Image (cartoon, rainbow, N blue to C red):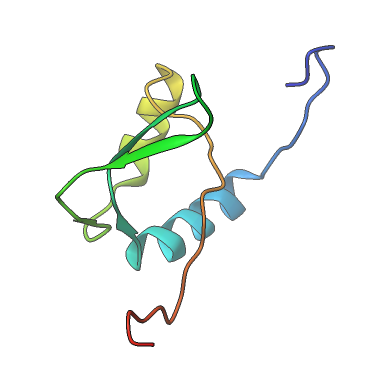
Length: 83
């Protein structure tokens, strides 16, 4: 919702379910923290989480109790550390 109470975005249940299964079946997560007190600063955890065995009903439950929120994130593909 926008500050004026207008709906900012919406998805049908079917498209959200399809997107969730496709995205999270191939996802890798790096837990992180960010601070904005003196500019943007990030701290990344030392564990990588793979999106194997994701559960859409868990996602819906956690959205309902506001433990998670929609964040478009950054999509990275074909990344290499080789120069």
